[in-house]
Length: 340
Image (tube, rainbow, N blue to C red; front, top):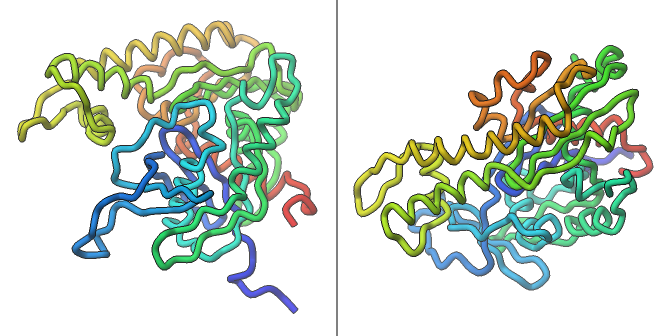
């Protein structure tokens, strides 16, 4: 007797970053949503349900609203193990059409959260992250939850290395021997952190690996501060700031105001910090075959990081490199018994 398709677990690569949550699915779909939510009900009644843009989820007796809300800050220490994280993850699984399905997932933690400086695992933190997403998060609507039955955790930038060395073609996967045997650095520019991982002879070189508490959320915060100062505002909605960074314009009192100089200055400051830390971690990259840039921040800052190293490259669809690598790790590296 074989399991019906509805009973077969769905493998998911889950990059639940502080700024955007991304998933990769084995059917080739790549889905991203802002990591945006807050505690409490939405307080909105939708005239047409088809236009609903805020969704409610309950986990551990707390209700969270996810979607088109002014979200609470996600860049706090416990976010990866929080109810807010679980609600946002449930929302993207619902968005992917996985309501009522059993999910096997691999997600990540920043390198410095996963490893101690001496290379030892931060096992307690890893276990908390692994267990957290197995706690139920239920949609408040008449929809079945997606249930995460298996969940493993790997370092985020290392996930992009798995994406780099495991190639897929016509449904078959193989390790690329050339990529596997050469020293490679991954620079993962995310929301809250930028991660560095150097892999040589299939081992992580911890002296050149780690995390910098700097990412695209810092750009948003600096732009928010600049708008508040320029227009003498006490508060500013998180959604409005996100749109302002993207469009380099902010709409206040029914008028559009150009803030391109604010956005450019904020990005330049972040770029200078990232460049200095990249040089500190990797030097000139002389002994590396390739330095691969990944992450959502790589997309946003692509024009600023083009000439840091002669041997650098930007991954294909760099924002999804971690999610793709997590899916490949789940499908081809995890022991079959682990995911059973």
